[in-house]
Image 1 (cartoon, rainbow, N blue to C red):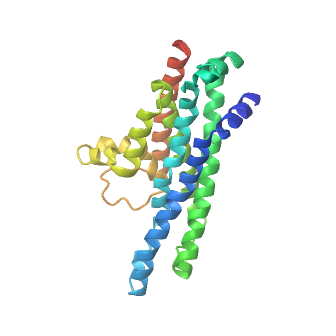
Image 2 (cartoon, rainbow, N blue to C red):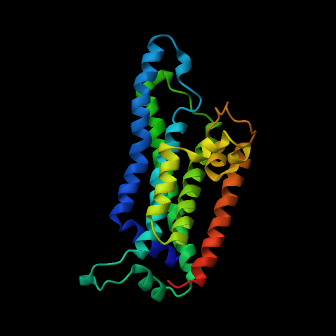
Image 3 (spheres, one colour):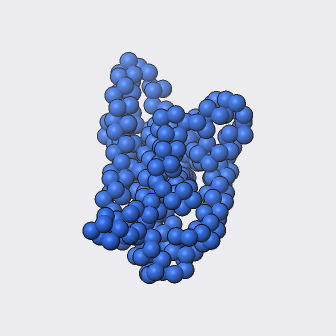
Length: 254
């Protein structure tokens, strides 16, 4: 428990992590605000179908960028070389001296990332759904017991995405590559989605499978996948990656 507390303290002491937290909250709420303008106009014209079943959930899918950044920073900050005035060393050296067991060190860090990401996802989901209610009023979709699994799916998706970024960064020991790949794939050009146009196997990539936990309107999908199955597929990807990352981390030089 001490190791986890220490990693949480270390993580929350980084300014870039607070920037990531802000991004995770601002991105989905900002997109909701923009989308709500056109939705209200459509409702005013009599189009009540403008409020889709996935409203709010789609926006939260973009907010996962914040969790991805947290997963990357948690590892890349350890390999950042300090200035000459500070000794020119790296945090990873000090961390491994304080906690010689590499596996326990990595487990504590991954747990800290998961905890922070889960809190961020929960806060972002509450803020996003509340904002929809504020903007659309009586036209906002009702939240009921059926939404509980979907909201839980959002939290799982963010946590697993953060751990995916965490594992890739452990392997690369640098934040640029995982940030570039994961953020671009999430927000600009969804490469995995484009691959589904070529082969249906692409639906089993972690992000494409993971969104099944909370997105319901996937009419273009040629693969039927239950939310639970989608979550298990994404979890399997993350577990495999973290296992490989742990083996590599424990065997190579710091």
